[in-house]
Amino acid sequence: MIKVHKKSIAALLSLVLLLSLAGCTADGGTEPEAETLFKAGTYTAIGDGRNGSIVVQVDFSDDAIEDIRVVTHNETYSVGNVPLELYPELIVKHQSLAVDIVSGATISSVAFLSAIRQCVQDAGGNPDELRAEIPKDAEPATDTEADIVVVGGGAAGMTAAVYAAEAGKKVILLEKLAFLGGTSAYSIEGIGASESLVHKGLGVAATSDDMYKNYVNSNPKGIPEAFDILAHNNGKAVDWLRSIGAPLTVTGSAFSVTSPREAGKLGLVVTSALKNEVEKKGVDIRLNNRAVELLMEDGAVTGVKVEGPSGEYTIKAKAVILTTGGFGANNEMVAKYVPELKGYNFSCSPGASGDGQLMAEAVGAQMADMDYIRVNYLYHTDGVKVYYMGSLANTGAIFVNNDGKRFINEQLSYNAGMDVVAQGGTGWMIFDQSMVDSIQDIREYYNLGLFESAPTIEELADKIGVNKENLVETVNRYVDFVKNGKDEDFGRPMLNLTFDEPPYYACKLTCHVQGTFGGIRTDTSGRVLNTENDVIPGLYAAGECASVGTYGANPMAVNIVFGRIAGESAAAYAQ
Image (cartoon, rainbow, N blue to C red; front, side, top):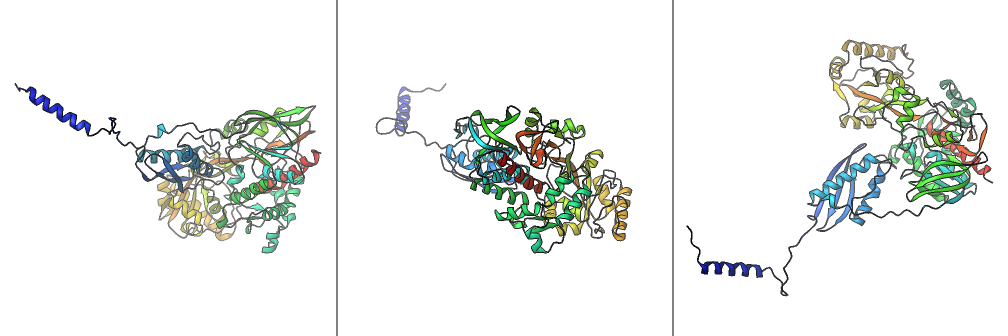
């Protein structure tokens, strides 16, 4: 048994008291230990965005988030990049991660925030504690008036707003998402430009009459009068876009122009120029404001009911222009009109959910060709958009089904989508090394690991699991077509890939809903027609939400040409 003497206990207590006094301040208080929220420094993390990695760096002091930088990303301009530009300032200012998800850019928003959370954790902080409420800057919802309300901020809507404002009208532009651009912002194609100044300067021989004939001959569902207006005005539209700052200087085809690579993709340069012009014209731009109902008096449209950040309000107007886009992002509507497309992904704007069509239909507007949906097969099965695979299709690659057989004219990517759906919804693009070497974007896809490759066609067939004999026979037959200058199976006009540069590649593609051709029936002045083919006074529509009869034509040209017409027509009505 251990004996403890009283003197020993007293000495021990004295020592404890002495040590405790060392931690006391002069006034008898206890010296607190220095606590920090973070370990100061710079931390890097990666979020998984829609189009690849979002790399973020965050600077921390001991007690605050000091700075946030996006190092690299591949998110779509005017869509996925919106939260990347919006969030850093909000988070640093309020020291809070409780930011709202940007409507229409959910994947990009979540990816960015997940990277920030990881940086907070790496710095020793707790992201769940950074949830202070961020005050909303929205103004109170107040009923108001305008001459013209434009509903939808894509290319057609911005064009309509500009021309209505140029006519001296007070214009309000409503956009339900947090950014302008719509599906037009995604465009990587050309824009129709027959007889434009740029085509004339480049010596392009194709005329507007040639373009008109091409449209009529290749799109039997179209309306000749609408094609005629489009073909003879698209060049002027390009001249106008160039005059407001869109660098459209490169020939895209015999009938189109596009932007130079260094300037950015077509959708980026066009929507950026339009946005700047809308702002210059003094248009009242209201983001995060969704029109939910058309107001009617005595059979005429007299305004809209709106859901805004601060509540519901109404805008009384002399005319309303619907430019809300298609309904490709509304799978319920898509499946209603084309049941085979139920569950398919979409690559249009997430705002293309049929709002305009539903509002117009509710006031008696005629809907036309709602089952005419644009399905594209240029979507990798991993969920990555690979639009530049269309360049391969146009210049030589072949597309086969899962049995190793061709079944379409590969150059008709817009029109062949439903054929791919009928084959089970997936297939393989087959090509050789020469095509990888010739197109920079294809090399980028290769670097992302999106291709399978093999030194021979036989080995490639084994690797991707398609019938070897069929694939070899398909390739050999196609090479014979190239040598003879005629595709006897599907009438493909451009034949130039002879498959003589191994290794050989395969990219597995699936379908996605790229847009809708049908919509609100209008006349060629942009006036909405009812089910009796009579004009609904005060209501106009343009762009993808409208059905004027330009099926299969260049979408961007349709947006600009008929957006202008709708804006001018509405301005003339709103006297």
